[in-house]
Length: 63
Length: 473
Image 1 (cartoon, one colour):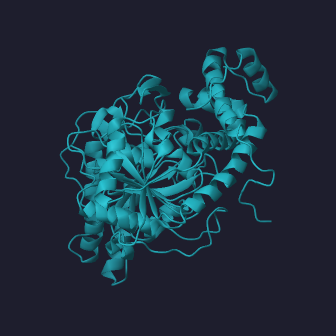
Image 2 (tube, helix red, strand yellow; image 1 turned 30 degrees about the vertical axis):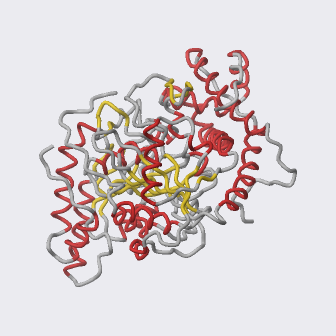
Image 3 (cartoon, helix red, strand yellow; image 1 turned 90 degrees about the vertical axis):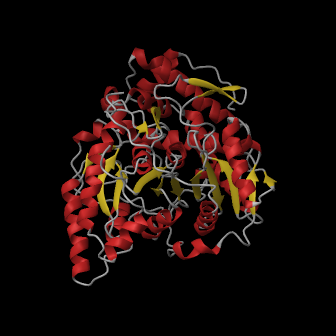
């Protein structure tokens, strides 16, 4: 199960979205805020586990 | 549905190659079968009849000239509508993509099956932009489960899985980022293979999250799955993530049995949060294989969470311009997911990518003394179309749709090859079990699946015919 994270306020969601050029219809806000809470809960679960500083991501990039 | 079901891919190819029938007759029968059966299920978004008949004629011509038409000669197949098909707009389940020009050439996987003699008969329905597990699509309607049309087919490759389950095509192509081949395979009761990350080219496939996107086949038998996989696998410089490792055919391996394979059941995360019947399906397979050992995949619950973050970060970036310009044109279900994903802090995305490297190292170590792991594919059978947001399973309330991926996400997160096998349970809704191996060890999965099939533990019986129209859902 994911950690419980409080749903972000709709004003915060609107403001953050606007700074990205995203206009969120007020009717969509509750669902978007709920989805964001779910992602932040997933983020909290991943971030709470300390990783050694030398663990790097493994993207496919061959210069 | 009055048109007869098609034989297995293997039987079709054998009959066409031996001139007992023609590819044209097979394809004509397939088109009739689709016409009769698809209205009740809504698997297809386009039927490529003209192309199919032309491709079938080419196969017949090659045979007439004494040339090899390929191992899939005359076998009809369907492709999820995020694969490029020359002359057909690549919808990726969206209304927005209707404004795009049709591609000039086929995706690599479609071209590979066509080179092997298979014949594309149509493109199939999916979740918008592949972001979900049910194929409830607001633009094109829900795909219905052939075993119970009131239920979802699973997703996001639901149209492909349902088409195979209903006998509308012996083979189909899907994609899997978090479970989108394995979940619908399990819920529709067919075989679905998500190969190792980088084993099958994704060139010409509309992406979701490039770090996690895979291509793979659906079939109703292990032999057919192996035929399709062998035609698909191998290097492709057009896909930057495609491995340079040479193809390793699995078909010759099927008869080797399970001798020498160390098989264990995944415990911990994979034994919680599921309905009793989903866990019982794993026990049934374990018993048939004599697999008594339990192993724990460390931090699998965190791997699932990290898979959600990587998917969100990459998918939101991919669609950012479309979200800015046309948010109202998205399917409401996926729009909310994409908009929220666009607000994900970068530090969390990078943490998830770093955790991925850590998790890969731990699971590599686990596969030092295990060859095949068993785990449930989904935590429960297909939910009803339009099911409530939440459901209770294993004593906890979970999100009905996202929870379908609870057991698939930790495995695709690190690109492991996984085969979902349909467990025989007469009278019950289909359920699947995941066979999981180390990277590039697909042959072990096919060997185990073949042994289970021979023992009658797994099988994909044809779903009963359905009448009527799926209607708008």
